[in-house]
Image 1 (tube, rainbow, N blue to C red):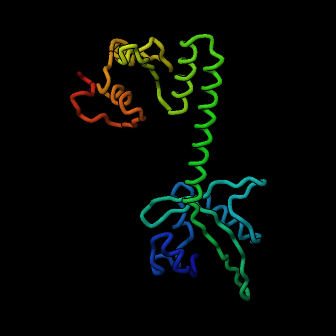
Image 2 (tube, rainbow, N blue to C red):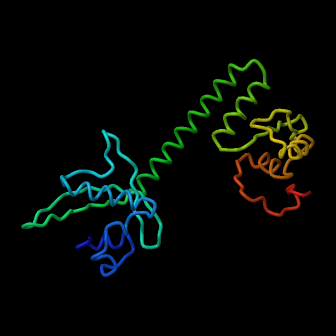
Image 3 (cartoon, one colour):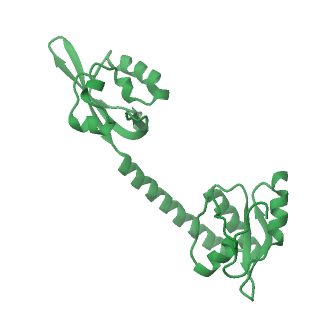
Length: 220
């Protein structure tokens, strides 16, 4: 049971001391992991030694804790047994590593993007045709971005955009109408989402296309 906390721990978890003192430590563990944590705790108390939680054969497992509001966050936890007469207390140091994990994710994503662009550049230089270069690029981008399917447009001599008959991904029957419509579309500069990107020269990420007259929407 929790017997003492400092103010930093209370701020980290969003509780008052009265809400935590005397409670089982599992109150700070995400619900799905509480049963496993209880078993770990019981096993640890059979032979309490200083150690880092989550360390398995030189591999550090991802640990998480839970705030009062139910939100989970990544942590690092160090355990240190403290003996007072006949009682063993466990001094637990919990570090919120959310910011560090975020930096690591951003660094990983940046490295993956650089590797992707390098691979595409090499493939384009080695491609035997424009079509094969476009296909490779589309395939890699679709996987990287997690798209179910991908389609490419090319800039014509009049600076309009027209589709090439190159698709990436499993073409299910449910995509048949979408593909037929897409293969027939043409976009002028500033027209629709593709034309807007063409004019701005900048990528646009949209999860819900706004109701604009120059954007083709589902049902048009």
